[in-house]
Every structure is written in structure tokens, then in C-alpha cells.
Image 1 (cartoon, rainbow, N blue to C red):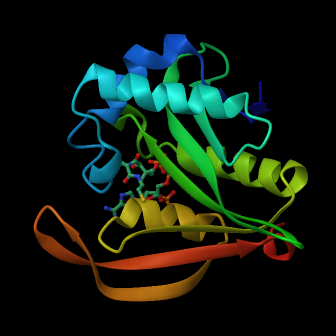
Image 2 (cartoon, protein in one colour):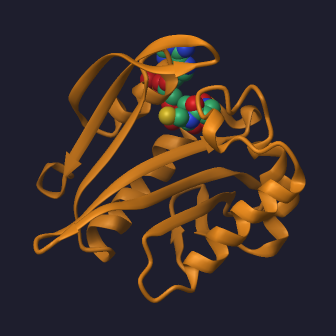
Image 3 (cartoon, protein in one colour):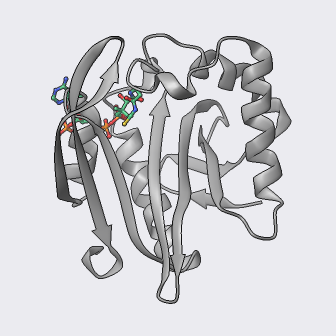
Length: 181
Ligand SMILES: CC(C)(COP(=O)(O)OP(=O)(O)OC[C@H]1O[C@@H](n2cnc3c(N)ncnc32)[C@H](O)[C@@H]1OP(=O)(O)O)[C@@H](O)C(=O)NCCC(=O)NCCS
């Protein structure tokens, strides 16, 4: 099991006991507003998602690293952070970073702290050469996390994504291993 520790957090592979709290998060209309494709409609769908994460964690050729973010002192569940391998080449891996946490924890620097720990882990342990992430341009909190991480804006997509019937711009950020301090 992967366990990554930071000042306040334990970021770890999933366990079956995550289901209830994970489902509350995955099914939340407000939290998942910008992520409708991964919002779940019932407990069974959340269970399937959790099973994918658990199965991946024991796979020998792992391409998804979906972690639970927890409070390292109380073990309480905070949210999700994950890396997905987009591309593997002779130089190493290109990974996509994604995150979402429960609303009561927003604005406390938690995703910035968790992302730093996971990025470090990816560059140190997963033969990663580049990390990408992106968001709908209106999702200012998410873009701010990317900026605070020192990521570099690579692409400004205009009118790229339809979300809840509205057309939105999207931004994409990147970090090369040599850009990470
Ligand atoms: C976006 C999200 C991941 C941020 O997590 P977080 O732990 O609150 O992030 P942090 O506290 O580390 O940093 C957030 C930053 O955005 C800023 N911010 C938040 N909302 C903002 C807004 N509407 N406009 C401008 N800045 C905003 C905060 O002030 C903070 O910046 P600061 O430290 O300079 O003050 C979290 O709000 C979330 O889970 N949202 C719902 C799911 C989601 O949208 N995920 C991302 C999909 S791409």
C-alpha cells in the first residue's frame, strides 16, 4: 500500500472502509459541479469506482494512482487526489493530476499540501517526467492550486467544454521534473 505523509495529511491507497465517506463526496452536486463525468448517482456507482482504485493498487502494471486524502492525526477522510498515467515512453511517464475534497475542508491549503506530496512522490518513485493538470477557467480555486504549485500554463483552450449546457474555456498546466523544486 502506498502511504505518503505530509505535515497534516496521510495520503494513501484506498480501503473498502472508505466507501461511505467517499460516496458522500462523489455524489455531492456542489463539489462535483466541475467534474460531472465522475459524479456518481448511487452507492453502487461509488462502489465500482472504489473497486477500480483498490484493484489498481494491487496491479503489477499500475496506471491509476487514486488516493484518499486523510487527516494524519485523526484518520478522518478529507477527499481524493489521483494520478493517471497518460503516456509512457523511453524517457519516463507523463501523468495527469486530479483532486477534489469535501467542502468543509476547502480553503485550508489542503489540496496544495496534498498535491505537493503526491507530485514529489511521482517524480521520486514513479519514473515521472511530466505532470499535467487542468480545469475549467471559471474554477478559480483549482487554477490557484496549480499556480501555487509552481505549475506553468501550457494551453488556454477557448470554448472547449460544455458543462451543464454552458460552454466554458479551459486551462491546462504542466510541470516537468526539472521545473519542480
Ligand atoms: C478546487 C479545490 C480542489 C481546492 O482545494 P483547497 O484545498 O480548497 O485548495 P487550497 O486551499 O490549497 O488553495 C485554494 C486557493 O484558491 C483560492 N480560491 C478559492 N476559491 C477562489 C475563487 N473563487 N476565486 C479566486 N481564488 C479562489 C484560495 O483563496 C486559495 O488561494 P490562497 O492560498 O492564495 O488564498 C477544492 O475547492 C475542491 O475540491 N473543489 C471541488 C472539486 C474541484 O473543482 N476539483 C478540481 C477540478 S479541476
